[in-house]
Length: 455
Ligand code: GDP
Ligand code: GDP
Image (cartoon, rainbow, N blue to C red):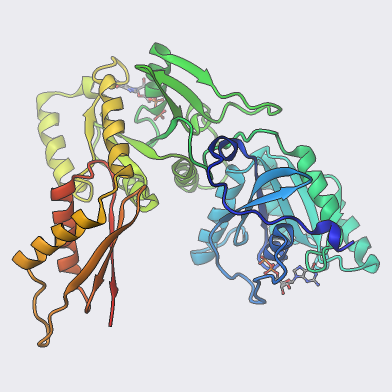
């Protein structure tokens, strides 16, 4: 019984870009402490499960490559799910909801020894609304005696509960077979956990800024290939639009085209939709209504893009409605409200008339080039060498921290690590960041600069 559940662990999908792009995604969700991590470890075939007994231990979504019966899929572990959560629990619950959005199928884990809780019931509602196929795992069924507990979970109306002991491996093979039965061959959410394929764009912005108008304008004039998802009745999730010979993948267009009315706070869902789209995207176009005052909500979306580390283009829409006076005040507002993104390319468009919509693509390309940019280590160090020689870190308490070495740790977005001989003040770090941009540009991409102190 135990061996049935043992699966082959698999490294990251290196090289295999096309397969990675289309590999289906399974999210593991459920309340904290029901055994999600244990199950994930079991599926990955890791003997020593890294789990803790503390309920509600926070962890972010983590994606792994898994395989069962010769089929490969991405397995996403989530921290847990508490409905009506606040604070840190809310964050974790959000992550679980995002994970469901980004999955092709869901393993919903319930603790059979506890039975159905109110939270479980609420999660069931959310899962139903998602329209994703769900396999119900009645976990902690360690032996025959507790199988009756599992049967109680028919009451969810999610079909057969699969009795599983994630701890001992009992029954997990049957549950995995059930997941494979409902998992599409090709992912409908591809891109979220993979690289490759057309570049992925998210159109973001508060309601009524013109997202769907812009989408129609782009799709109407150019060639659209709707990425149809076999076996689902949902709207296409993404749309491929060919503009001037290049295909772009606009992510989550279903959420733009179909206005979803949801029971919970509209703000919560707007921000969740934004986050989900950002997860899938490489670059975001944030639309701002140029006719209206720049709002708190606009700034929040821009901040979400920065926090997600995605490339950014600002599109001021409804330009056809602007008079000279409004244009004047808009410039003042931009200076004041969007100070955190002086680096974002900006286009002034009208989704209605089509004015300057063609400028969007060059802006996207610029932003993505910056996002992908890698500065050779030699060049980086000679640059920092010059800066530091001309403007050394101020002396504090008789000491002067020196910059020993700099390297670019990653691209997408560019992340830099400085090794220093002592604490670097925030002001000096900002100065270095500013000079980095002045030298290398990075137009359209956030950058990060972190400092490690070497004793
Ligand atoms: P998560 O918060 O949902 O990821 O739950 P964990 O995987 O961290 O498990 C919570 C606790 O339940 C740990 O103490 C696990 O050892 C225990 N547990 C998980 N699966 C089983 C199971 O199948 N049987 C029993 N008896 N305990 C389990
Ligand atoms: P969404 O909620 O962001 O998808 O916004 P919509 O595309 O539905 O647009 C909201 C309203 O603004 C609609 O009445 C559109 O016709 C209008 N609209 C969108 N873009 C423009 C534009 O560039 N100029 C003008 N005048 N109206 C626009």
